[in-house]
Image 1 (cartoon, rainbow, N blue to C red):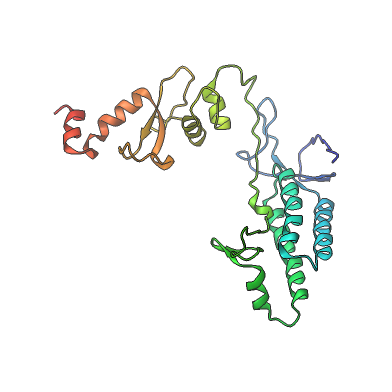
Image 2: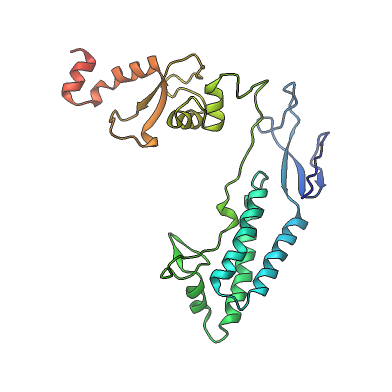
Length: 267
């Protein structure tokens, strides 16, 4: 697919429609405004969404498959639709797309409802809904019966999470050795454990005890928030400076068992 690149200049809320993107500048306050390279606020925020013509083409393609599969088994139709849905959603996941994904899921449901009712003209709408949309987890999905050896269910556009890209700071490079920055940005780094890298990304590169940013020369330690070392869930873990970890352990002495509390407090 051809990719169109556009450079937007000026101040205002104008609309630019390019294929395959719809680009618009929204007036916003200074705290959400885009900025120039020198830090000057532009006064607007640029959002890119899928173009309407591409949305219509995607819906038309799904409609053609559903009409062609009027006499197909449900599993065969699902296996034909899933690659189209996942591929389109993955392509546009870097756009502002969640509202578009939700609308596409609703319109796809309308098409599938007509497909199901046409197959059973003498059955009630409730019977058709229960037949083709069984409950999966906490919601109804277009899927085959759970008694089949391998249940097939229709993928939805909203199952694909949005992906946002942040500008790399300055002249950063993955080979500069600043493992704190790249762990915070990506949640992984070759020389850092996955657990520590995940905590750095979740905390935004800050120590939760002192609030200061980590430096790549600092000694970092993983702390158990409630003091229970057997509880290794991520909600109970945090990355701290080595000296902050020592200070927290001293202050947390009252929450430890009596024997360990006496050793920590020095009483």
